[in-house]
Length: 77
Image (cartoon, rainbow, N blue to C red; front, side, top):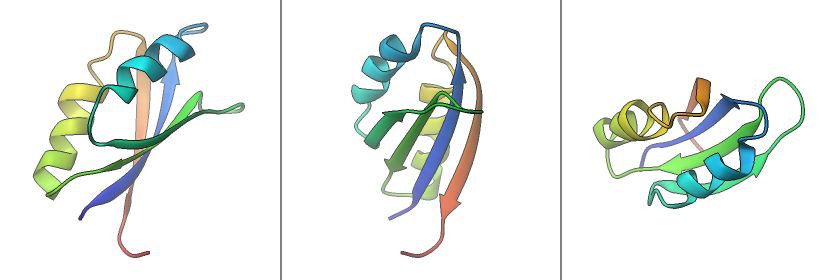
């Protein structure tokens, strides 16, 4: 199963709101607020690479308060 970590920059003060929206996505397995360059770090998992791509492109990046993302696809455990 394809897995990835996605690092997000969000609008200032929108971290909790974005976390709630991310939690509603079935592909999101873990989500954390982070201090530093990125505001939120999530772990996602999908059945296929195509659905993983769609989750990032059409569900995560389209959240209004998300400014940018960096996706790190995992190859092995």
